[in-house]
Length: 309
Figure 1 (tube, rainbow, N blue to C red):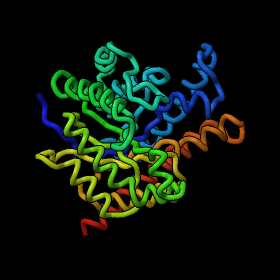
Figure 2 (figure 1 turned 30 degrees about the horizontal axis):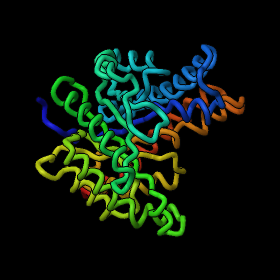
Figure 3 (figure 1 turned 90 degrees about the horizontal axis):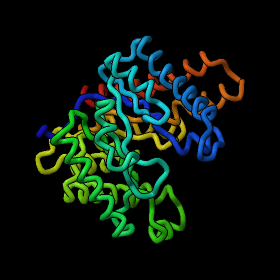
C-alpha cells in the first residue's frame, strides 16, 4: 500500500467539463449526435493545444498537468500519456448533486485503461446537508480511495465543493459572498475531517478559493493532520473572473501546503466562445489559453518566492 500525499508543485489546466460543455457552451441536449460529439472533442483539442503551446513557450513541464475526461478527451489522454505529461481523469458522473461513478462497477477498468497520474473526483458535500446522501457518498468514495491506495498507481485528487444549504444562505440574507467568507471555510475544514473519519484519503485536496490567509492555513492543517504531512492543497478557479482568481491564488500561495491550482474556465471559456463565434482564429484562441495558464502560474510562483524570501 502506497503512502498518502503529493507535495510537488502542481499547476492544472482542467477541462473535464461535460454537462456544462454540452449545455452551456454548445446548447446541446442528450443524447448527443456523432456530429455534436465531434464538435466538443474539437473544442477540447483547442484547450489541449493551449497547454502544449504553454509548454513550448517554457512553462515548466514538471509542474504542468491537464485534467480531461474520457468521454470527449480519450485521444488527448492517450497523447498526454505518450508524451510523458502529468494528467488527471475524472471518475464521477457529470452534473449530479450526489457523487457516483461515471462507469459504475467498471470504474477500476477505466482508470487502468489510461493509468492517469491522478484520478479525480468532484464531490458536493456540506456537513449539514442530507445525511443519507452524505453516507452514500462516503461509501462510494471510500471504495475508490481504498482501490487507489492498494491497487492502482494513480494518485487521488479530490475536488471538494461546499454549496450552501438553504438555511445557511438565509442566515446571510441570501448573500453568497457573505456565506463564502464567514461560513464556508469552517464547513470546508469540517468536510475534510469527516472524509478522513470515513477513511477517504486523498493525496491532494482541490478546494475552493479563500479570501483570508488564516482560513487557508486552517484547511492545510486539517488536510495534513494525523500524520498526513505530504498531502497537498490546490486552489480551484470556480469559473471566477481574472481578478478574483488572482486574489485566491495570491492568498493561498503564501501558505505552506498549498502546492498549486486548477483553473479551467477562467483560462479557456472566453477564447473558445470567441473562436466558435468566428471572432478570432483558432491559433489566437490557443495562444490566449496558453497565455492565461502561464499568467496564473506566474502569480502563484511570484507569491511563493516572496513568502520564502
